[in-house]
Amino acid sequence: MREEHDVPLSSLTTMRVGGPASRLLTVETTDELVDAVREVDDAEEPLLVLSGGSNLVVGDEGFPGTVVRVATTGIARESVDSRGGALVRVAAGEDWDGLVAGAVEQGWAGIEALSGIPGLTGATPIQNVGAYGQEVAQTIAQVRTWDREEQAVRTFFNADCRFTYRHSRFKGTDRFVVLDVLYQLEVADLSRPIAYSALAEGLGVPLGTRVPLADTRAAVLEQRRRRGMVLEAADHDTWSCGSFFTNPILSKAEFDEFAERAAERLGFEAPGPPRFPEPDGRVKTSAAWLIEKAGFAKGFGLPAPAALSTKHTLAVTNRGGATTADVLALARQLRDGVEDAFGIRLVNEPVLVGEQL
Image 1 (cartoon, rainbow, N blue to C red):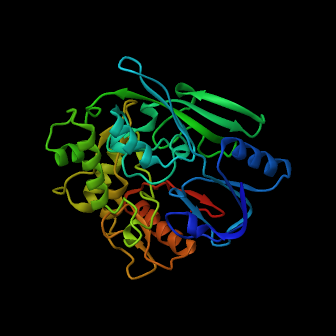
Image 2: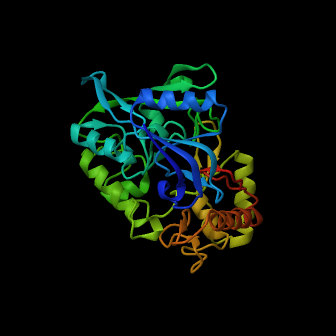
Image 3: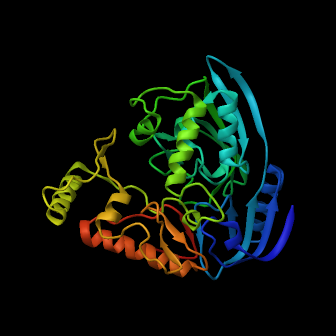
């Protein structure tokens, strides 16, 4: 375990904003992770558990307590066979894209469309990470956690995790610290059926087709790079939290009212808003479409230090030198502009520490 003081959290997040941590503990084993959390809780000090920092926006004042940075490692194959698949237990501190790359190389299907997502494995069940027609809820068998209230290790099976769109029982609470995740992947040379139209188009196949795992990964990475969603230090379009807002999910009546309002605003000849039916009868629409049609184009805000990505309207980016205040001011402008235009209030996807939108 390594202890440091007054470390700028901007250096540990992909948005590259945020003030200092009063105290930073970097833990490299699961036992160290539990011990560090218990120590802080016993002292009744403020605690922030930091993963890869890819879904986190910390206030400019920093964090007035202890930040526990998860750097645990370990990938263990508990069983592999063609019928039951590959059961793979992964430490919370393992790099997510490294895990995906390894799964593709081993011939384990189920997470290949989640290539290129920054961050660590332990964060994936918290917000039910998903992209290009896949989400981790489809492959997670267990999540092993430290329960800070019960002071005990507690394991949740998939059905107990309460996975929904970009949400789980672990999001919005600091009670559970993820220790490791057990994934159940398919042993196969081909991907899971392609379920995202843009990805299918990029691969040149119909929806529902299975293609070689490596081809899927390459196509996803190509799509993400075009949208500025693969981290590159020299590209300020990637100095972000990825998608800053979740896609709204509306009741059918709410969607119909929204579509009517959109038609009045944009003209009845314009294409209607994106519509993605949900299994429960609700309808999901596109936050990126809402932002663009509300008048915020790619690059909106430039040359200010915080601006929309020049590649994707859903990414709020740090153009170099931005503060958290700059980032959130732009996010509020987007949220309020969409609400004024369409009556829909966008919800931020990244976790805000010491701040509110």
